[in-house]
Image 1 (cartoon, rainbow, N blue to C red):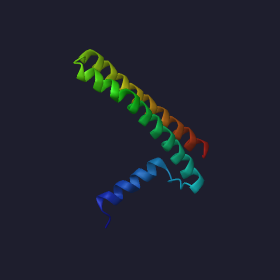
Image 2 (cartoon, rainbow, N blue to C red):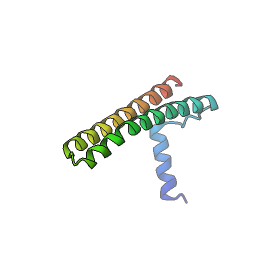
Image 3 (cartoon, helix red, strand yellow):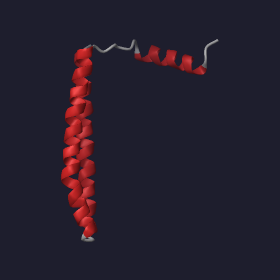
Image 4 (cartoon, one colour):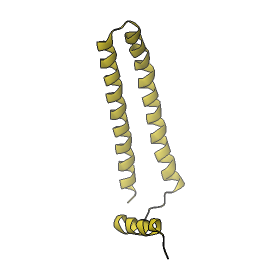
Length: 94
């Protein structure tokens, strides 16, 4: 008798089709994209975090809020770009 988990996994695989195995080259390409965007995210955080802390120390809450919002927008944009590039790469393998 199958467990609920096994039944759910069968239904999921029936909906999505067979799982594609990635080659080492494909894994390397995905890892390269992750590495590039990890660096870009770190760069934005390194650039904006001191400005946020400076605004906080001078009690400039408006500036702090604006800079924090900018950081969140920038990070969201970078993550979206990262996922789009990975998805484009995945689609090119089909």
